[in-house]
Image (cartoon, rainbow, N blue to C red; front, side):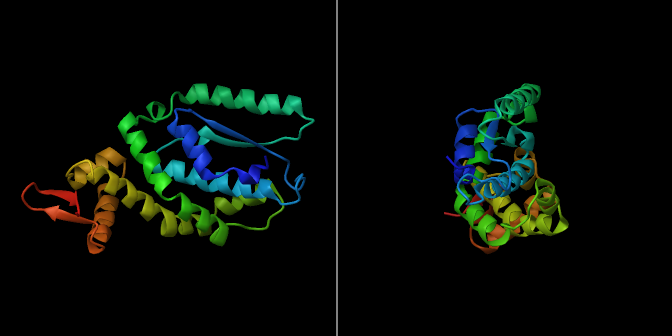
Length: 213
């Protein structure tokens, strides 16, 4: 299967099923077997997904893309062996980051709800024509992309996590901040936005935020 066919939902399913890391093998850049540049698409997807993982508190090194041809068994072995060692070093997903199982499930569910939107952002705003891995890495580390991420994805990820948490029960700003690993100021900002859209309300009786019915 072409690496360009690897969807973010495949990665999420693996993590949700308990995988501590995901390795994706792809053809070398500019050597696509299907002449579709699917490996460039895979690199773009992985770059975005690693940013998402970092934002929600998961170590992005749990997701790796390695370039290798069918005749390079030794290189493939090197990729996999080094990745396995890295995952052993990081420990079980969630636990290695100090996140409870409930917290991990919530974060993965929040990302899952955004998969169609993530695909759209990657295709419409972040799919580029560059020839080398170094160029692509510089692009995704640029202020331009970081700004786009904050504008298009960070807010939706934060609100998604907050809504899932509030559906479990009322929470204060401080409780939400502690549960999600977000700063109190960011939580307040996302709550204000959600309140304006009728998604949450402040319950004066319990002095907590609740999900709107």
